Length: 88
Image (tube, rainbow, N blue to C red; front, top):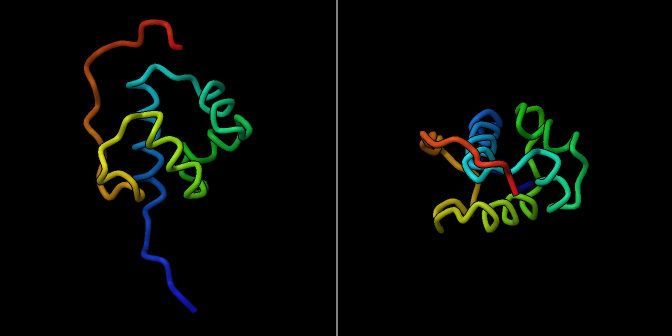
């Protein structure tokens, strides 16, 4: 059986939170965009489970991540200094 490389759920969770907050997108708006429940987004951001790759790719497009972010991140993105201006 093929073994997937180890992916740190906490690293993915942190990346998701930081990119989502940088773009001023609520968990509810992200869930609607992806067609998943808010609970799924919360579980991903808590590091309980990993999002399926199809959802990670959709988030990558939404968050305008660089090409290296196509796979799950191996490091944390930089936290922006700015505040959200009211969301979508």
